[in-house]
Figure 1 (cartoon, rainbow, N blue to C red):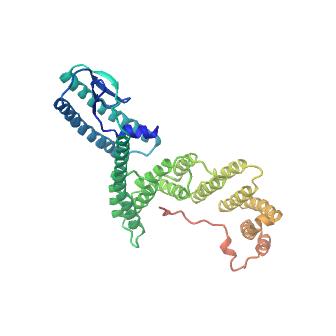
Figure 2 (cartoon, one colour):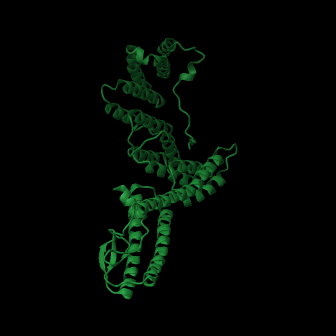
Figure 3 (tube, rainbow, N blue to C red):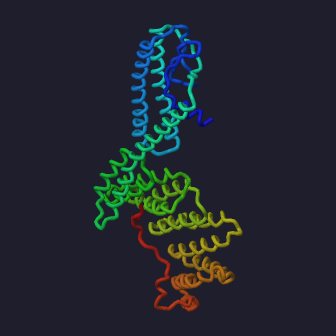
Length: 402
């Protein structure tokens, strides 16, 4: 079946005389393999030759359309948001435009035949073809296919070179952000923009203080990846918060963050990390209202058998409570976490040192100096190293990630 289709596509025969002496011209096969039949005309070679010359002229224009239409649509598509519906829409438009060109050529060819030879009949186009000719047709088709692949490969080779050049501009000892943005304009004119492109351009635009454009690139790359959540999304979400705050306010930043987070399908670990990022941002910007509710919702959503995530999310909640200066609530959380770790020392024993010190600092802040000293001793950590374990956070900055 496939061989027959390939032989049909590679068939270059445009005219034949059947066994009854009737003349059959191949049409443009709009929907099926048919031809125009003339009975008992006995067309001369000159008449057939002139008609086929006209057909060759039409084919030249049709080949231009085959070449120009996809390029035209492609150059429009690469400047639009890369979505499934955009690709689907442009694929449909490509088919419609090519079919319109074929219809037009078929109409011209039909009119030419009627004008010169009168009305015709529609018949199956079945020229006498030997096995050798069929093999040649298949070879012809494969040759065209290989040529198209080679042309596409040649066209896309510069895309890799341009992308590598952008990375070099950013990773140099003295990054050249202006050159990177110039190269990105060339790349984006000819090639579809991928996630790596948006990450690099967002960084360069941030470095050039074009914060709005940088933020828009992060929003675009988070949207184009759909429900999928990747490692690079941690950086993207952190920078989304940072830039939205810089351009608007911390409150709006959190609203936008929540909107984009809900679009992603995440594991429990990824969800907890997103809650952590948002919590640290909220603490830094004095917006504690929703932090504990986020942790409570996350814990409530867990499977009761998922003790590992319950333990570590409880630890995170205790840590954040300390940062919020809710020391008594933090001590309650640390009590739960430490009791569970001691009861399951084989699985969580290594976490006890840090938990004791963190609880010790919470007790110290709440005025229980003796309790704090007892926890510091229980941790087994050298007193010269204790201060390294105090819960803290670093002021948020732009995170480089591309």
